[in-house]
Image 1: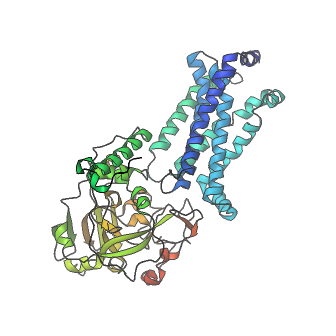
Image 2: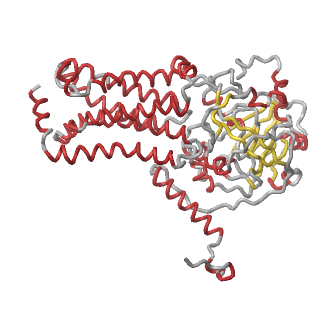
Length: 211
Length: 313
């Protein structure tokens, strides 16, 4: 806990707060801005709705994996900044997953709730995608300092949900593609590496900082 | 602003059409490379599509609004050139489509290897405006230029043992770079039952929108079976075989539970992973209801009388 609070204090370092974080914030928003720009300019190809939905989903998955990479990155680089932007990256993962889901509900299905419900029940890739989304909600809601302090140790337990969420995301991708598993495999390999990296930490100190 | 009269412009100042086209293609390729850095590009050589002579006004043509040429020629499933929808338009120009020959073999009285020009000489071309429904739930309306497959079949006189027609796409990995990865079992193969092949709606197409076929749409010659999902309409055909037994088909080999031999468009039979009730017509926002046999029920429903369409999907 002491270590954790020392991080919070270092958050006040002006360069981190005024330059680094805003820069990361803008960078993370660029894929979204770019896709919206292409969509509005009719530059997403012949099937813009499919392209927009697919791209937002890919970015959601990318941000999940980037978020999971921050803890290993901190250890490898021996620097604290990866952990300082981790919450923002995680929230961006949630943001892109929301855009992905809204794109499916609004642009693709246009509020055809009957069809959407049938999809969720009958289509495994949509079931698992929706599961990932629902599991992300409590993480997003409890990502603020107030909830962190309130939940105490349980906060960390709760936020371990990110691992099954990332697995759901990759499986969602695998189950929706036709024949070509090249990209889903790339994401799966990255996820496996990120999870494997945590194994020794989990095994040696189960109650310790396993993030 | 100085506006020159046409006769003021020296011919040397005008960009030749071929250069203009190449520039456009170069820009597209550059954009493509920037977005997909993991796929290598190829040499850039624009293919100017020649106009074709053909009859119009076929009774089989749809009256619906046609999908624009740009969409038809840039949104393709042609895994031989990559699995991305935009890959075929970027890389199919690498394919050599002339000379081209087709092997006719199996249960047929005139087997052999025939030059495409010699085959085409025998057939008058006509326009057929057909709906195209992809198994991925999008659809288009395409003005194909071609001739009935039945006319070709009759000329080669299949024997009485010929119950099916099998088709094969070119296998040339050095020009079709998608074939360098075994996403599907190359070469791509497809097949029809003889009565489906002989049906007047079934055509071999050599062009679209009045011009010869863009490579990415299956040049120089492809099948079009409008009441079946798009993948049945095999592209860049190099072999037509007549068989007694039902021939293997690529997507069926890849995922037997998802893609059957028949693959007739059917809103009542879902793909195991998604509903087939609706489709998005390219260029439209709201999805449409998918029609039985893609709207060709009146013409083809009889072919499948008494068959359990859930079993023979």
